[in-house]
Image (cartoon, rainbow, N blue to C red; front, side):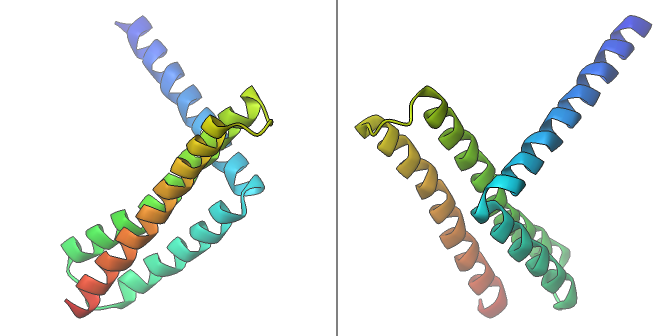
Length: 120
């Protein structure tokens, strides 16, 4: 039983360290990641200043930070594509465009949710 707990704690500790390294790497190297992190932090502050219900805040939080999550996914996707080859290729373009589309869709969705909750 103790071996299982030790293995579980070790794995989760390592996973946390590697996750934070990935987030920090994306933050350091990607303008979009830095920009949306700052915007998301500011919007999170606004959420708690406005007179909103807990559910409204939760929905806004999910929609807002989803943009940052999509930036992370897009950064990972672009890194893998670049690792394979930096040569121009239609499939590389397609993959990168789809990653960009994820971020765009998250931004549009967040904007709609904010507008619905604020002016609904």
